[in-house]
Length: 192
Ligand SMILES: Cc1cc2nc3c(=O)[nH]c(=O)nc-3n(C[C@H](O)[C@H](O)[C@H](O)COP(=O)(O)O)c2cc1C
Image 1 (cartoon, rainbow, N blue to C red):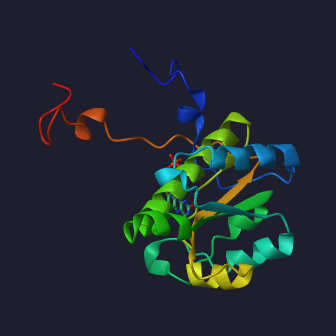
Image 2 (image 1 turned 90 degrees about the horizontal axis):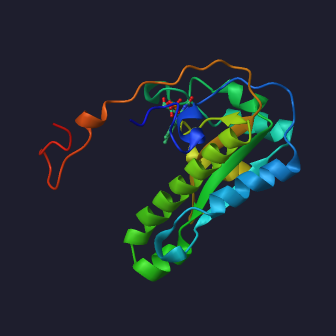
Image 3 (image 1 turned 60 degrees about the vertical axis):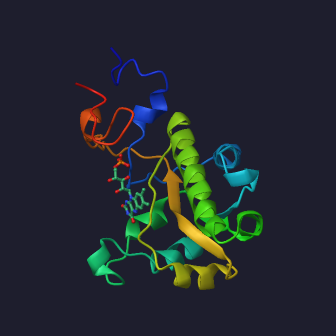
């Protein structure tokens, strides 16, 4: 039986979101490995809409913290200060132009989906490298675009703060497979 401990890709189960970082910097080679992982994601028509802004300047990290919020209802009032402690913050952007040119308006969504896949590749690779991080979607996109001079037709999928962590974050539970699977059609159980 497949369990967490014999799962063939350890990073799948080892990855947990961590939000406390040590001061240890990350080797630039590792940053490159993370970025390469992002670019190995699948993308609609191989249009590769992702672009990554690597923020390693402490002042810039502090600046973007001011464009974050935690919890939907606290929008704008509750900054995610912990982000500034990450060695690097990768801003995952999606330049939708090529995908829209190829697929029309649907390409706007597909380009975002592609970039989401890139973010997951980055997080899994970080785990495999002994690094930690978290996907941050609690952002005021427009404010960050202004801070970082991101053009109008480039969207931000999220921030990915990455660093070394000593945080003992317990893996969060998942819904049982039985609840989220179907066989051949909806509402026919895959598992009896
Ligand atoms: C699109 C998206 C947005 C997220 N935004 C935030 C966020 O703004 N702040 C945060 O602390 N975690 C954020 N998370 C992380 C989730 O809280 C986390 O993935 C979830 O609780 C499951 O925990 P795990 O990643 O440890 O498995 C986000 C995750 C996703 C996929």
